[in-house]
Image 1: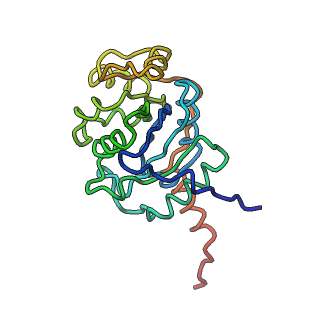
Image 2: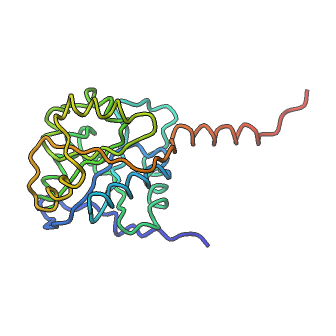
Length: 222
């Protein structure tokens, strides 16, 4: 039986109209496509930091990635919502589609204004922290929200070193959890969440799909 996607939970709050005090983890990305690795990040962040919800923010086009082989935004949203269906705490949206520039800094500033009472935290994989200096206004971005970095295979040491250099001394996960709950986070602030790794990769999934298509295509006879 096909799974029914509840799109009502994925609606973006109207600017300045949300009075929510929820603890929400924000995860940005292309989600091309959404996969088990994204679920792993969501589950780890929610459990370790005691969050109420995780929002997947699907980017129309990551400025640091090529548009080649990028599925249309509508398809990536639909697929991500199907993947998120078994997890009621997950919401999938694309707020950048309504913004003039799809930079993470602009997105986080927008959501912070949209939900001034919510306790927000930016959640990212360790592989992304290594290239944080390439992000638009990253110095200002780290002053908007606390950051939770989820460990990824082979990126642990590089991520910790980069975080220490860019974000300063890291907090323990327990301290970060308390600070988020009490709205007492002093920015910039970050923590590193370790645990069981998930090696899933969108690039590998796309390659596997391509190989499957090639192998299933009938070969022409000479």
